[in-house]
Length: 504
Ligand SMILES: Cc1cc2nc3c(=O)[nH]c(=O)nc-3n(C[C@H](O)[C@H](O)[C@H](O)COP(=O)(O)OP(=O)(O)OC[C@H]3O[C@@H](n4cnc5c(N)ncnc54)[C@H](O)[C@@H]3O)c2cc1C
Image 1 (cartoon, rainbow, N blue to C red):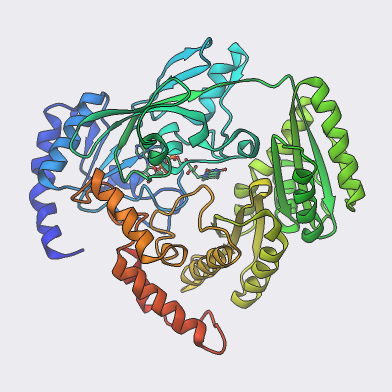
Image 2 (image 1 turned 90 degrees about the horizontal axis):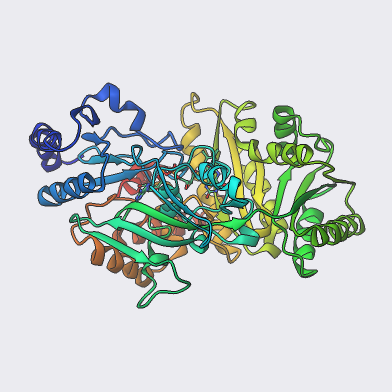
């Protein structure tokens, strides 16, 4: 932290808190370190920082006032939903205000005729489908964290999930967003019709990671609950065969409701945890859900099962009841905590590759796993080519997190080399800011800065996240070029640059 900012912090904490307490319940203006400890990180606990002040406003007017005051003093603001993010996007700024939307947890309206739901940003993802169920409707994007993550956080990260292959990501399921800008203006993007006039600013907000404004209301599309859904669970003797089978399902013209893959390590961990009835001896597992009308499901479920057998599946099971379908998914959806039971720590990466590259990237991850001496469990949204390698490590071993982080970065760079990208759904945050320099050239990064500048000229909204400075990009590229020029890419190389690059 630089001295100027330290001074600002000392001056501003008492003054700002006093200003906030004039219009926010004083209980919800938190300044003491102990109470703020719960906000110091998101799901990526390696990046921790205590905010200067945490506020939990209860009305949109209060959010507007907080933003106006922070704008006046050029104080950074970090919005926070449920804090389940995995890229340190909601990590507070130590000289700034953490604005939690936890008090905005109401479902404002469910319009069954229009099949829309109007939500406050702190509503949990799963709560939307639970509330819509009595009307025969549901909200399709279903991150594995859906029991906890907020709809505002889903918009900010453009969250994905098992059902996004067929029904689209968050961006495809939102019609309107209300947002408070950096200077406290309340704006609406999108509308309840199919299209809106002008540029598609609604799409721009998706995945903007709290850099462009604070989302205060979200209108989501609801879909009719499918008449029927069944899952084919297929074991394979290699990840290559399973990867090829994924491509073949799509080639057949079948769009599954979900198409997920796990490798042998993840299969055993998930089955130990969920007792899901997985084929434990398989080297790879595919879960393929077909949903729709009864006739569609009956036809396609058999077609997929037959295809998997033809492609060499060593076991094929079709769920025979709703309980069994949910059990099959329970294993997949609890894969992260399940892996957490077999290692002191795990680090979840998130990269995307073209579907046809699945087996190549897995080979590369295995090679890197040996190079770094760290085990990896692989869980994917295979239909979307979205990888989640879980690197197992022990943070109590000095240097092991740094090694793990470097390994993760190398996986992302392999994704870019394979024609993919550095994030599928978890965002860039602080975690992947260095790899932005690998994914994008200076001109592209400049365009991101131009967009950011047009919403937030002073750069006080979630500063240091998602978009690196050009200088840092150039430094990182030159460091990586030097490393790659070395005869052997040992993981024991000098990390002294990394702290500097991390907090741009
Ligand atoms: C076990 C586990 C499984 C997961 N599985 C998935 C998955 O399948 N798919 C997936 O996409 N993600 C997944 N995630 C990641 C995470 O749950 C999602 O990114 C989710 O969208 C984050 O929502 P949140 O409310 O927790 O946001 P937070 O973590 O609080 O914030 C995330 C980012 O959004 C910004 N933000 C939050 N609320 C607002 C707001 N109201 N206005 C403006 N900006 C805001 C924050 O500043 C931050 O940059 C998983 C996480 C865990 C821990």
